[in-house]
Amino acid sequence: MSKKKDALLAEYAGDISEKFSETPDMKFLNKVVAGLGPAIYNRDASFVSGSDASELETVRTNFLIKKLGLDDGPHLMHAIKEVIREYGTSERNKHRAVVYYILARRFKKEDAYK
Image 1: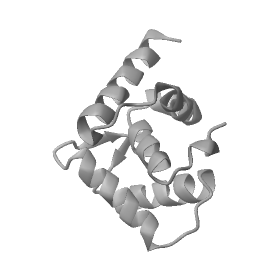
Image 2: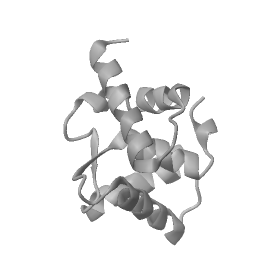
Image 3: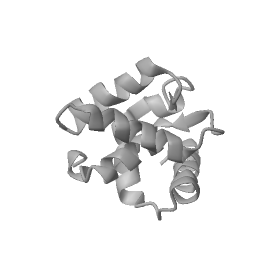
């Protein structure tokens, strides 16, 4: 594993511990990060803007519905906004890997990452 990836994983794990009061499952976090591929190194793609409605829509459509296979409904956007709120409004840039990790765990869809 690259030093850069190791540093990012440590940062993600720190956010999960601090912002969500959870002990990160590093094996699962690694799977989420692998699923994002090179996007974790792209400044724009590696973050979720909690105030950008089109960005939240992308998370709903591409991640919750397509990747996790969830049925569409208002509960999806509610869950996204809840995670964004918990991450903290003062935290302008929310790591996509952390948001995806928390959402997958909340919906009990870890098996989407085999």
